Length: 445
Ligand code: PA5
Image 1: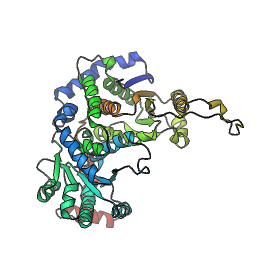
Image 2: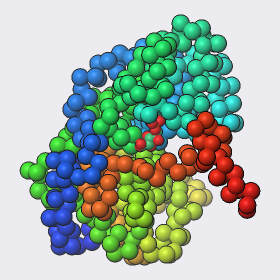
Image 3: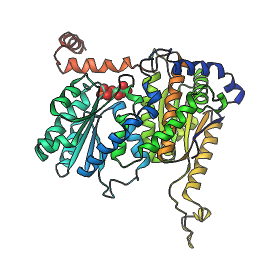
Image 4: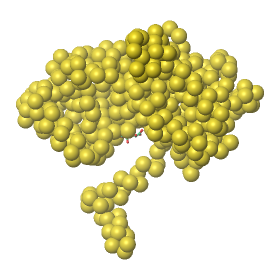
């Protein structure tokens, strides 16, 4: 199997990158030896190996749900759904939902939209469905609300005994409302270990169970992740051969030069949610103490027709990291047309991917010329192994990069602020003081 490759020649000189060798290696040592801030959240480093003993149980559970359900609803938010959706979308056929494939994986608890829930409930009324409810804390409002509605619906539609066979909960081993509920109802469960944060949990049951339910090969995913985790964390790997160190060095250098925004770019719409997963990973890990690269993303060539002008010509605070898929899984050749009314015969005989690749190269050159440095991640193919490698590469790169920035990459104190206000506004018991304060503030406006 070919490995993913990271290159930086359209962004900076190798001598510049070389000057970050000591700093990145020191950050990596801090990460691997567990001597830095947030060192109680490093369980993800060993996941590709440690989780193997649970793979058989995860696959058995997935097989049972696949046999019983036309639709499986993954209930979760943030790190409790983005990894699964990223992998499933990247590897499933784009039109799986129209092909009548079963089961279909859909998502809930990742928003509080009434229309979304209404429409989902309406759809499920005609379906045999199951639920995977994922919440590490077991108390997050969005998934708890969706789970309450869907659990009741499933019990009404299928009966309590069948519902019990079709509900699986993934949560803390002991704490939280979801653990209490799962124990009380006798649901099958998997555990999210204490030392694994949500955004680093895709290779735990949080990601693996939904991915297996979609019919994908979780062993191959873990093989790729294990290979890249070993490569990126080993002190034996030279700096020049360690893609995670090179990436962390390049992005921190660019940030220190004033490039405050990183655009993750793809040329395949199936990778859209890989970018969403990456945004959470880097945004929640680095955006602290009024520091951190702002992670944004675009889908090219689609967004070249909307965001292209800004990227080429707007404020010069951007750099791009392009994910380039080397070999598509399928082949489509542009046909010749004797009338050539659309003027496209210059493309006849070429594969569509060749056109895409020239768009990619042309854009990288244009953006580099326009003052947008371009980093490149080459993915050999869209398959489980390569995506597993990509996940491990980004995770190690994130830990190293966060330590270079001088923050704790493994906490997320900022996400509590909105929750406190929301609970106060909804009169949640225990928030009386906050309710009084927020109502006074609103009434004074
Ligand atoms: O990465 C994180 O910690 C968060 O995004 C969480 O995954 C998200 O808030 C959901 O939390 P929980 O799994 O506790 O419901």
